[in-house]
Length: 402
Ligand SMILES: *Cc1c(COP(=O)(O)O)cnc(C)c1O
Image (cartoon, rainbow, N blue to C red; front, top):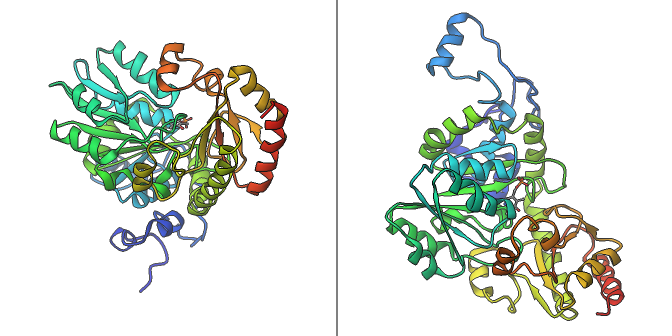
């Protein structure tokens, strides 16, 4: 008989990712609601004192406190694990809470981490500023160069940490090659997959051990809430991540989890359409600016690798102007439809100047090493008609003499 409430994972795990994004993890209450219920509660009541004791001992299933468990958050966690083809997932209050927890839950004084240099600005703050404070050694490498990962290995290397495509330079890391190097040395690999989303790239298929997300980006997809997630083996999630997050408390709110659940239902549609729009806009911009980077154009130095790992080019592109900050800011100010905003993954097209915003906290030396120059602009392509975005760029480029 078809079950009307709850879900049997042995059945649901057979569904394809686009089905998981709509239905994975749904657990209906006794009311049989079609849309997931929003459980705004911080605590749970017990039928008797012995039930409370049993639940705290772990002898009885059930929830005890929303820093530890919440039905709405749990639906999102199960959906994300199913979409990724992973054993388990846990959500956090933001993408940075996920990245911080992933690193601090398993690294200790004396351990060594190797990280790619082209990463989200706050991820570089974790590797360059936070971890060294606790005596954790960090080596930064050019993530595109597999030999550099290998050369960085030390006897105490515990983790590799990377992002691909990377923000905002769109560097591509060969996930399979880098995972093979790590595993041979007994290290594990964490991939920040926020840019691609599980629709375009599932890093575990190439050997990644842990995948971390800013769900604020494509997963919400409409610029409403902050959220994060960590996906991995049941052993890692239950025995390494959970003791850290349950006690330190970077918990995702039930409301934000519910918003992301709704966002996931349209994730496949949005990512594919926004990637189509990005390709169309990139082809136009390439004829008008000195240099453009988009993973799905043959002009991208790692085009072949990008297209082996990703189902489409993604929603982000970067352009480089010759006129430095003045011309870059001039272009931003001349845009009428595209918003000036440092967020990404929204249904609205958003553009930012990384050197003076998202990556302003890094030293100029680090920015130059990463390729974040004064003439660089990053565009997050939305769901508008691509021709309207192209028309907006056409007039704005003219305004700055291009
Ligand atoms: C946005 C982002 C983060 C941080 O996520 P928040 O939800 O803003 O905390 C981390 N990594 C990448 C690649 C991002 O784009």
